[in-house]
Picture (tube, rainbow, N blue to C red):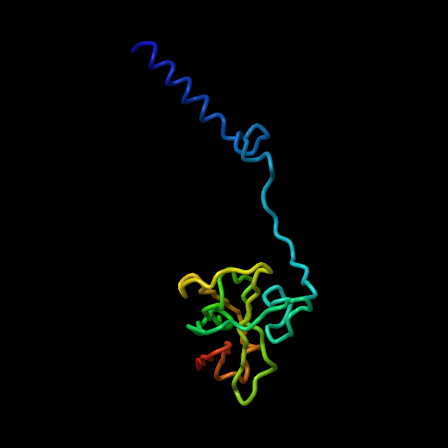
Length: 164
């Protein structure tokens, strides 16, 4: 106990004398410097807007076919626009690259999309409907939705509409 008290006093005096340690180079918190503020250089394009318009034509080379049946369609609000989500039943198993392809601009407040899929080059079985369900979604900005009151998604055998 007699040795402990002097050791504690020495440790206390040593630590209180190290007030300058906070700003010294020996402190690991000072090794990388502090953050600084800098003005943002505006980019030529708006990062929040998509590169391609949702109303533009699909790129050349896409060989999609209409999905057999559109089973679900929903319009969901997202910040800055809406999300169009559609589910369909493909003609056979193995469908991939599902897209909602716009069919022109809005006509009398109705924007029409064709739900298309690609199939593998080899023959695949048809299988039950549960194994052929495909889903596609498309985000639209408020600017792209101007004048659109109803969204229609067309398949081979049916179509579904949803109003906003």
